[in-house]
Amino acid sequence: MKKYSKFTKYFQEYKWSNILTMIRNGRSDPKICREDFHDKLVVLTGATSGIGYHTARKYASHGANLLCINRNPEKSEVLRHEIESEFGVGCDFRIADLSILSDVVRVSIELSQRNTPIDVLIHNAGIYLTKKAITIDGYEKVFVVHYLSSFIMNYILMNKLKAQEKARIIMVGSEAHRFAAWGLRLDDLNWEKRRYSGLRSYGSAKTAQLLSMIVFNEQFQNTGVTINTMHPGAVKTETAQENGPVYKWFKRNFLDKSLRSPEISAEALFYLGVSKEIEGMSGKFFSLTTEEVPAPPALDKEVACELWDLTLKLAGFQAHAPK
Ligand SMILES: NC(=O)c1ccc[n+]([C@@H]2O[C@H](COP(=O)([O-])OP(=O)(O)OC[C@H]3O[C@@H](n4cnc5c(N)ncnc54)[C@H](OP(=O)(O)O)[C@@H]3O)[C@@H](O)[C@H]2O)c1
Image (cartoon, rainbow, N blue to C red; front, side, top):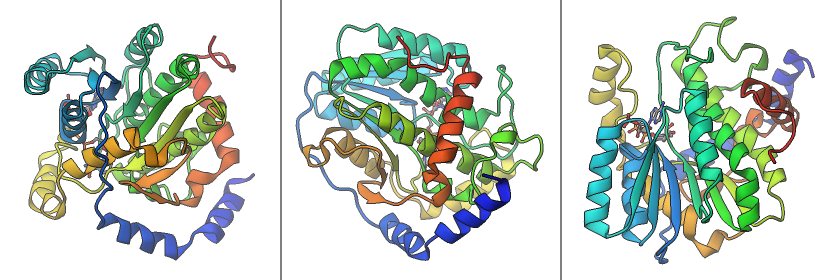
C-alpha cells in the first residue's frame, strides 16, 4: 500500500476513546501477583538501573534466579552481590552492549545452548536520545537497542523456547509508540530523509517492537510460549542520561516531578511473567497489567510482515526460522 493511503488508513482507524483509556490506565495501579517463583530462571536485559533493577529485585524476592544481560561490568557485580546476599538466589550476568549486533548474537547463541529452561525473558534495556547516533553496524541506535536487539534475541531463542513448551517473553514497550503517529518509515529507518526527533525515533522503535510481536506471536501459536508487550508506567529512572545538560536539567526539574516509582513497573512485570490469571495470553499490549489497544500503525499486519523480512536482512539472517 502507498505511503499516503497508509496515512488515510491510520487516520480512519484512530479512536479518541483509546487515548482516553490510555490516560485513565496511566493513573491505575498494577495487579499484584503473590505467587512463588522459586528455582525458575528469569533472563532480563538492562538490570543495572531503573525498571530493570527493581524488576530483578522483585523476581529475586519471590525466589527466582536471574541471568542479567547488562553493558556495565562494575554495576553488574554490585547488583549480583546485592541480590545474592539479600535474597539467597543466583544472580549471574553476561556483558553485552545491545547496540552492537555481534554482542547481541553472541549472548543469544549462548542462551539458546543452555540445557535448562528460561522461564521468563524480559527485554527491558532502553535508551532515549535527543540527537541521532549511528551504531558501529551502521544503524540508528535507539532502533537497535529497543527493537533490533530484542528481535535478534527472540529469533535466535525461538526453537529453544518452543522446545521447552513453556516460556513467557515480555517486551518493555511504551505508550510513546503513539509518537510514530503515521507509522514506520521502512524506507528510512536511519533517519536520513527526515529530521531526527527523539520522540519520533523512540516511538518508531517501540512501534517496531509491537509489530514484531504480531509475527512472533504467530510463530509461537500452540507452543506454550507467549509474547506480550507492556508499558511500564511513566516512572522516575536514570533514562536519557546520554543527552545534553539542557535536556537533563529539564528532566530533573520538570519531567521527574510528575513520575511514579519504578517499583510499580517491577510489580507489573512480575505479574505478567508469573500470574496464572494471564496463562496463555499472548500477542497483547498492556499498560502495566491492563490490556490496551495499541495505535493503528502498531497493528498493521502488512507492515509487520515487511518489517520482519527487512529485519532478517538487517540482522544478516536467512529468511527462515533458525534450526
Ligand atoms: N521510565 C519510564 O517512564 C519509561 C516509560 C516507558 C517505557 N520505558 C522503557 O523502560 C525500559 C527501561 O528504562 P528505564 O526507564 O528503567 O531506564 P534506565 O534507568 O536508563 O535503565 C535502562 C537500562 O538499560 C541498560 N542499557 C541501555 N543501553 C544499553 C545497551 N546499549 N546495552 C545494554 N544495556 C543497555 C542500562 O544500562 P546502564 O545501567 O549501563 O546505563 C540500564 O540498565 C526501556 O525500554 C524504556 O524505553 C520507560
